[in-house]
Length: 91
Image (tube, rainbow, N blue to C red):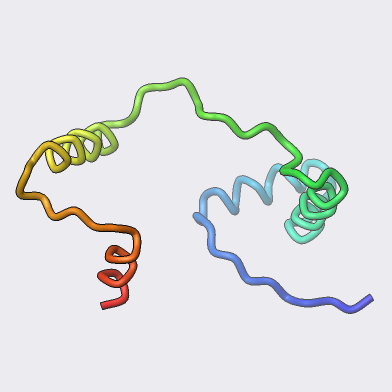
């Protein structure tokens, strides 16, 4: 079996909390991630339920939603097709 190195970015607090939790189970981060990946492959799925949480959005999210509604209702707001949006992002 050959091995490879994987580099991921995550919030530092999440990493520290996860390391502490996994340590309680006698696991390090590498072992825990490998367990997740192997279980995903076994089940051919994400091995836990993914759903939207039933809670109110925070203030920043509320402001962003209101701004999106305002822009969508503004006839002067530029509209893009998917192709145009991708081209704009590449500029």
